[in-house]
Image (cartoon, rainbow, N blue to C red; front, side):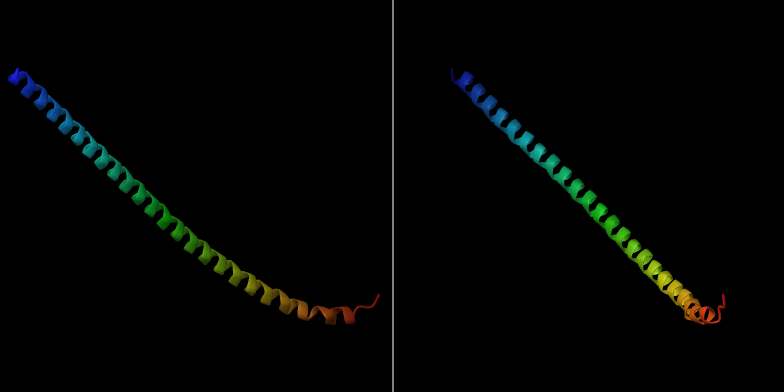
Length: 89
């Protein structure tokens, strides 16, 4: 009878240890999954920041081009009034 009780107790301890081991393995897996998701989010954030910086550079280049075009076109428009003054129908 005592041997049967010891066997059942050992099996209960073994089952408890197996459950604890499973919980630890699951927690480790979840931690790794969370770390991978965080790394992926960080990579996406860095890519978005690089894209935003590139967009700012493109916008600034476009603004400078527009300013240059304004200066070039406005100088031609400055002389336009004189041509109409000399126009005789």
